Length: 316
Image (cartoon, rainbow, N blue to C red; front, top):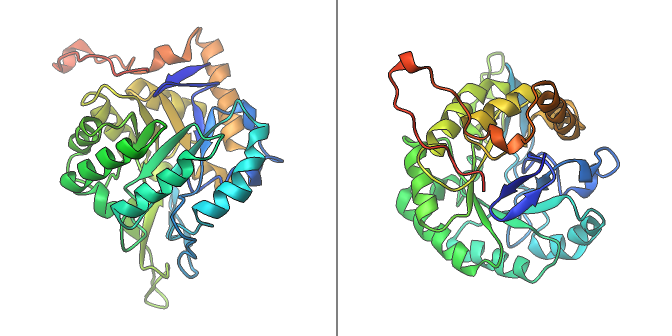
């Protein structure tokens, strides 16, 4: 069940997604952290952020709409109070999601995290649709993305994973930009910009008016974007978007992902990540898959489709 991602060895390819697993310590009495491949922390900024006012989460058909606003304790508080508790789980890879409103803020957060122990990699958040500065502003512009990723990679002492925005014209092009700028891996997709309106009050249901759509509703689109990106770049991909069942994870691996992230499912079932890790292992046994890594990019395109076979994506 082990997979290699950007030089890291994961116990299995199931990772808890950023913003859905707190700082990890909140789940240690619910989920056996060493039975999942790892988790990504909430977005960590230079200074503490209070996030948006309620209402911040709205249920939708086959999904969820959120506009949390990257509420977090800030890098200093995270390093001094949250991170030490995670040393008890050396097999569970801790990936820190890094956010800033400016390039300088991103770099300052990375430099502070470089001094801390127990972190496996950074996930550069260039795709959050719920803040008014930073976030998606970097992920939607190729020039800004290239500059930020290159600067972050130069400042980092650890692998840099770039979390791409799906709110772009060509996800494959943005994947190429991130890879060319030095990204060790990419994760996709983040949430889709969306909104919900209360017909009775004639008001938006979210205080921020718009938010990010996630859950099973976005899975087919996310799967297509992972497939396109995997054929555009050779660096590993973490796929996410509506994964609820082990078969969902298998689909993302077949499309080209090396590992998957599970997010919204944890709201309905706090043990979703561990359940999916066990379920994926059972699926592999039943289907006589000796190495889960062999599923990456193993999608079979029928000859009658007329599509040309392409090189398999990286599993490293």
